[in-house]
Amino acid sequence: MKTLIVYTYPNHKSLNYAFLQEVIKGCRENPAIEEIQILDLYEEQFDPRLIFHEHKRRRDMYRDPKMEKYRQQLSWADQLVFVYPIWWGRPPAMLLGYIDQLFAANFAYRDTKGLFPEGLLKGKSVVCVSTMKGPTNYPFLWLNNAHKILMKRALFKFVGMKKVKFFEFGNMESKRGKQKQKLNKVYRYFSKVAY
Image 1 (cartoon, one colour):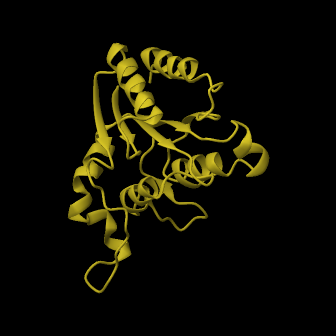
Image 2 (cartoon, rainbow, N blue to C red):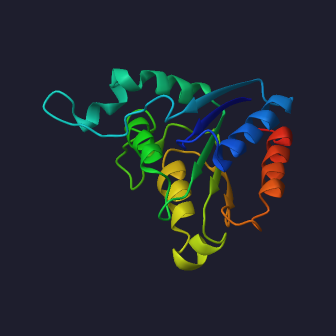
């Protein structure tokens, strides 16, 4: 299994970075994972802005030469892992900009004459590791599970990825947030997960 880890947080002295390190450590110890690649969107200085004009049209995004490296990474991977905070009930704008540009028509999906498009990223699995300041059940109870619906239904299922797992960790700024147990839970999962 080949694993692409996409990290989206601007601070390398943070709990999110600690989660990234546990994902990497677990993957390196897992005999089912042959190779890993790490994409740090902030370190990469990824530009999340969508820009369209007469020379750059939305329908041609799948051919954008600036995104070729990222398309190759995504095509290469069997498993995608996203590590990010939940801000205002959703992933950071940096990650959403990556998704907007990378998960383009004719690369991630193809329009059909039917009701739904054909997902072109079938067979890949996805794990989302996310943190938030509020309680763990906040997105479910107050936001009608908007984060999971956005990521699983509106994105991953749309492009053909059906195997999706979430780790949503709340209370991460609290002294009673059980951060060490949650870090260990992520490490254990990645050290044993088989594709």
